[in-house]
Length: 402
Ligand code: KDG
Ligand code: MG
Image (cartoon, rainbow, N blue to C red; front, top):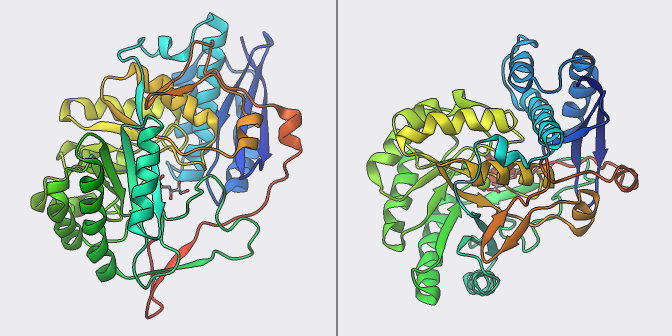
């Protein structure tokens, strides 16, 4: 069965998504997600101009060889544009193989080793009391794990406090919009948030928090230590992880579990973090770390170090990535949790899917392949809109990490 066509579909059902659809000589097609939030057309162009032509005529079953070809044929290694394209092709080929053999992809990955993947979702509002209300609502909906964020006094527009995380911030704006930041005010409020949460709901629900790359190693160590009594499931992206060794200092100062890596594109980005056991969870995703094949390589490396995965699952990755994450999630031993942010309704219509959520757990379903598709006619109705992720400036105007 050979690859006959690689279509690249860009659509905006509530937010931008880039999809690769591979067609084959046997009439079986497969889909893969290539969405890179804020840089969508770079990946779409890379796919259509550089990747698609070299795939035509190749054996659609040769997944590993195609993955290696995509890693090596550009000569220029890794990088999010390259790996988002590689991820989409990889997912689509797993989808095709599952459909051709009549099995859900998780069967190709070794079969089930758990009944469902525990999901966490996002509670975040300006006031601590409102975040706690959201937390209680999610517990009523069945969640066993919830990420908590809250406003920082004196700082307008803080990461994670939008009630609706499904839509795209800054869509249609000509420039990235600017958020503020104040580390001291932030470090003052976060311990209060978790104190209030534990008081309200006790210890029966896992609580998580995303720092979103804002702290220095010593600040992160302080925060982790300060939160220990509240027993977080994880503290995410406490610092920008450009230098993996920076996590040594954080690790030495706190036993709060650490999660890193939604921006990682390969094992190279987290090899030291895992080998030195500087983290507990790696956040790499099927869409940015080389598809199911790339994600499996990271997980296999992490397993003996007792590092688990907790795949990035924000709304800016399409339902195709969620489906891939769940096939990986039920069949891979060291999977810890899966992030779940709801997509806009229109996106769920454009990408009909077999995965389900019940009692806090996600399940990929039993449909052959990934169990997700793209309705091309519907997708065509939603035109791409340029959008940027925000940037952050300190009070004195200094640009810092978003
Ligand atoms: O595109 C960037 C978002 O996916 C990211 O900011 C969301 O940090 C995030 C998370 O943990 O979901
Ligand atoms: Mg994050």
